[in-house]
Image (tube, rainbow over all chains, first blue to last red):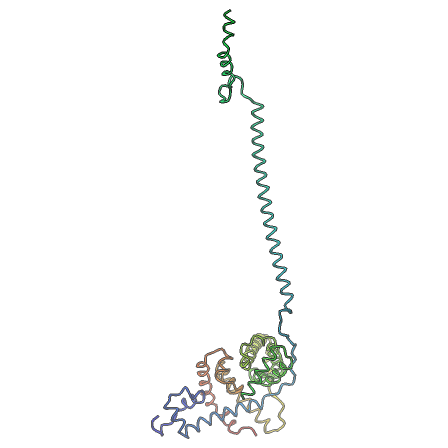
Length: 168
Length: 195
C-alpha cells in the first residue's frame, strides 16, 4: 500500500465498513488519504444507511398499545407465605425428629425391662427348681457349706462324756 | 446521545424500584424498535404485535434481573430474538399440519400506511428486494446483518444479543456484506432512495 495508486480491493473495503480498526495500519493510512477508496467505503455505508432508513420508513406501525401488568419489586414482607411455609416445614421436621427420638428411647427402655424381666424369671426358675428338687441327704457332703457331720464330730470331741457314760 | 442513554438508564433504575410511570416510558421508548425488529423477522404485523406484547411482559417481569441498566437495549433485543425463535419453532410445527398459515402471513406482510403511489410502489419493490437479500443469507449472517444495519446496534451490542464473540459477529457481517454487494436490484433501489 505504499503506492497511492494501489487502492483497496473489494474485501478490504468491506472489512473497513465492518470495522476499520481490523485493517493493517498501512491500509488504514491509505484509506485515510485516498479519496477513491474513501469514496467506495462511504458509498457502501451510504447504501446501508439508506437500507436502514427505508426499513424503518416502510415498516408498519404497531396499532395496539402494550398493556403491562405491574409487578411490584418483591420486598421481604411480601414473601410472608414463603417464610410461613419454611417455618412450618422446620416445625414438621423437628416434630418428626423428636417423635423418632422419643420412640427410639422408649423402645430401648422397653427392651431393657424385658431383658431384666427375663433374667428375673430365669433366677426365679432356678430358685424354684432348687426348692422343688433339693438334693437328697446322701449328697450334702458335696456342698461346700454343709457342716452337718463336722458339727457332730465337734460335739463328740468337746464332750467325750458320752463315751465315758457308755463305758460306765 | 449520552443524555438519552443516561435518561434510559435512569428510567430503568426507577422502573426496577417499582415506578410504574418509568416502566411505561421505557415501553414507549422501545415499542416501535422492538415491533420493527420482530416484524422484519416474521413479516406478519399481527403476529409482530402479539410478540411485542409478550416481549414487554417479559421485560417488566425480569427487569430486576438486568445487571447493567445501561445495556437494556441489547437485553431487550435478546428477549425479542428468543421470542421470535420460539414463534418460528411453533409455526414450523403448525405449518407441518396446515400450510394456510404461511399464506396468511404473506398476505399480512404488506403494510398499508403509505398513501403516496410512488412510495407504495417503492415499498413493494423494497419488500421484494429486501426479502431476496435476507433469504440469500445464512441464519447467522441474516441475524447479524439485521441487528447491525436495520436495528442499528453496534458490534458489541450485536455480540451481546447473540451471545457470540465480536470477531464472530464481524466475520458473519463481512460475509453478509459481500452478499449484499452482489445484489444489483437492491443497489439500484437504494441509490434511488426515498422519494
